[in-house]
Image 1 (cartoon, one colour):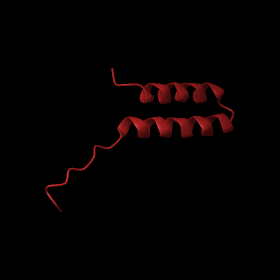
Image 2 (tube, helix red, strand yellow):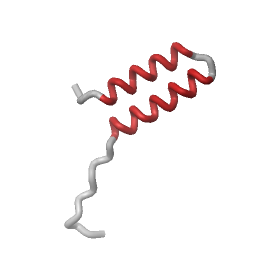
Image 3 (cartoon, one colour):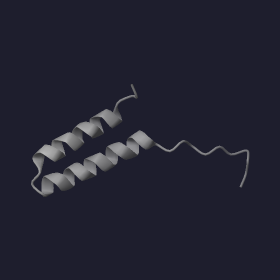
Length: 51
């Protein structure tokens, strides 16, 4: 392992947003619009700058 190379930080918020959108799709496909809407809100928050 080279010590002169820094690993890029893991894009946590982007990952959470993408996973929330995928779970929202799954919830909607399963007929749960309320859960899908909540997960879409999570994705929006994850896509915004941290508070």
